[in-house]
Image (cartoon, rainbow, N blue to C red; front, side):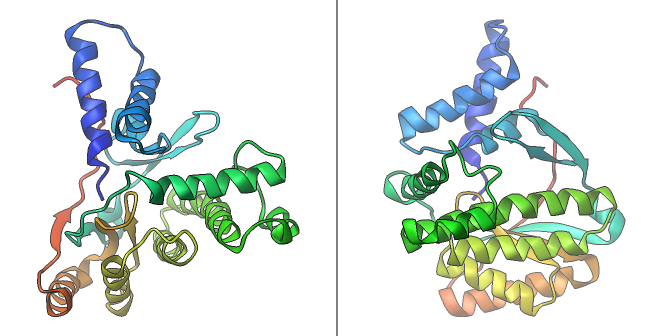
Length: 258
């Protein structure tokens, strides 16, 4: 749940590029990583993870338009505003290879085709509702999540621009439960961690990575941090027989020569 494959692809490609002075630009390095997933791993993923691993910038979040490849950085300094960011690792191994991930992509492609678009990017809920009787219920739910997520991204960027982290946390929860109920890429353990976060008053919690296991990422008020971690460990252990692993989040620069 931490995009480790993309990190490996991006740093390895960057190393080869540097060692052999190949002169490949960073956009192409990200695309090569994505091609590795498609052609070697068999996961028809987007380019977000590889792009973040190549273009990451310390102290910033990135908004990437996967259609145009335009991107923009947004300052992200939660500690300045009294928050901490932490990953809780469910230690559930996720398997993206094979049908689950690719099935969801196919759903989105089918809906986009009915809408007369190549992608769902830019589609509205009104447009989706207008074709609801022409698509399956499952495809409708998948598209509803994606269209809602596009708006959530814009809302978060706007909130970060004014240093308001409360709506950021709310959108994180909306994303998590959209991924759980509509996109159906969560699992029982991740839903449990998100529920515990809500009950502990955590500002925001959501799936991290491709789903089907892995981590939640949590935006926590500093004064609630210790009690939240202790509660999450205890309750998760009581239910599943082991504690989640805890990782502090540090946003750093992307793949680079040291």
